[in-house]
Length: 497
Image (cartoon, rainbow, N blue to C red; front, side, top):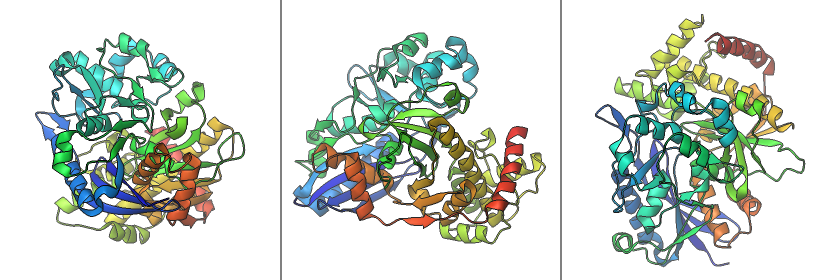
């Protein structure tokens, strides 16, 4: 086939970028065109995303793409994080900036929410893990507070849906992101009318669109602003984790249960397996796992883990204090620290949004009777080893829920570059770890566009392209006895706090 160029607009919680994917029929090559910062904006007691600044950067990236590739661009698609959303009014006007998922309005909301529908009822209906920032609770907080925006809302659009609307004028809710709301029923594959009615939410939800849907051409004003004329806009797995999992360079399992799992590693660590159907039972509810939509009609049975947010926030605090460290410097310093000296629960509430992450880590260790890490290297080693311990817990639960043995962990995303964390994961879980590709979200986005256009046959063929195109690093477990002993300590402190 002739070489084709697709564009991935990949926006994460801390940064975004526009990338070109050049595909020759066998291999995919990435080129970064524009990168920009993202993060919360604090205003009037709330936390918001600066949507219009993000949109300005998206257009800058598209202009750079047009300058480089011209009419070779055949398609583009947007992926972002999950759960967050905005509204349009009945005149098509954007109703304010979307709130950040860490906004305080949902703090402690479960108490009131479970009076409307029990935890068991919600899980049976949605199969989703319970997180206070899920869209359901954000919407309920708005209704509880008599939100004027909710009153005026006509259209509910999740973050990637907003960008696809800005690009094309088309409104819809792509399935992989819709499944993060805790308002989607994975059995009926539609919005949960029961929960929408119980929580008194307005009729603002759109038809759920399958991954790969072609939305058509760009708006005339976007064509004028960017110069891109002929490209189609195609829905990738708009939830970034769905796109990242699509880029896992695994081979198809031959048994009934998957023999591999993934960790999409970044601000969060999303750890799970790809299944053919949702797993909704008492054990899944007890372990607080989630069933989210995947590419090709698959289900992502996974759990959210605190992730490299711990390290990102430590780095930010030290930078503000005049001590700026590169990621590689932090890894080198933590390598020199004493192994397995102190541990934390990465998912403890005290690490959600502390004012000072290094101090929060030290305070946790002190409260649990451990020696508090002092140096930067000790703090980072504590965070990384604790993440690996949490991976071990989830790895065991995944095997229990699927009834099979998982002997390989694929780490994809930016966190795959953290060699120390990858080795710790192998040591802790006592299995092989394959790290890469690092740009998995963009790769999965691009490959889904290629499948939609008929340039690749299906998900597994696209994974073969990924294996042919990107190098990976393999890690084998070592010194597992020390990790076994430390895991016992980890479980004791988890049960203590």
